[in-house]
Amino acid sequence: MPVTHLPIIDISPSTDADTTHKQKIAAEIHSAAHEYGFFYLTGYQIPEQLIKDCFEAARVFFDLSPSVKSQIAIEKSPCHRGWYALGGEILDPVHQQEGDIKEGLKIGNDLPLTHPLVTKNIPLHGPNLWPQTDQDINAAEWKNTMQTTYEHFCATGLELMQYFAMALNLKADYFDCWLTPPQAEPMATLSPIRYPPLEPDDKKLSAGAHTDFGCLTLLAQDDNEGLEIAMPDGTWLSVPPIEKTLVVNIGDMLAFWSGGKYRSTLHRVQNRSGRPRQSLAFFYDPAYNTPLSNLTNNPNMNSAATSEADNEVKTALDHLLQKIGDSFSYQQNR
Image (cartoon, rainbow, N blue to C red; front, side, top):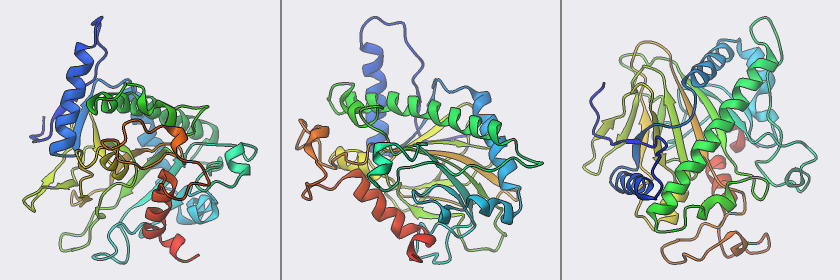
């Protein structure tokens, strides 16, 4: 097993009749979120074969020609879905204006055009863009793999947020009202990513230093290293892949809800493995009208605290729109 300073937290189901087991897990998550903003997760209920199938489906897509991939280019989506090319995302515009050396996909909550949130033109809500069947891809199987993976990650994300609620001394189901359909449609995104190998003398980064925009990120890695997190002393700590684990990190929203108790940690990617690197990022973000209020000051906050007419409280949608607008080149050219 690779050497790591990050905690490895096991959330395997327990047969305990009381809450002792869950409270122990919540305490471990609290400590890791406070000290690092990152930890490894094991014991989750996502089939390993499904993750492997998703990696393979993504590889097949990324191997297609740019002209074929561009049929579902993110620029064609009204709700930030589809494929973006190398340089399409610019996570650190100060140090890497030409954008990240990676390509990726955005697969979200696949809402039909008739859904109320779509007919109301709520940004970031709508249907996904799916590849068409050709000699390399069976569209129905490809879509099913991605959607099944998305659903499993949603379930694990919800389970983790219940532990975070306990860690913040809230009821375990505190966040459920912003994350559980049909009362709420989470703005979650499954994002397969491929990083081509960097040249040995290349000063560029595969992904520029950034914090994640939303609530919680779950990450599956292939067997190539590359992910690094910023430490308080200014050094960078490698987060190597460990078999049968996911990497979990805190996003801006959860850091804000916690009143700064939890770190939304700066991180970056450098693929110097000499071969393509793949990852599978799942960004678990709440419903669009979720208020971004400090829960340590307002523990009674609920989903009714913010209405569409309330401009005093920033919402999850406000934050995501700002961050996406800042970091995607096609948004800046509109």
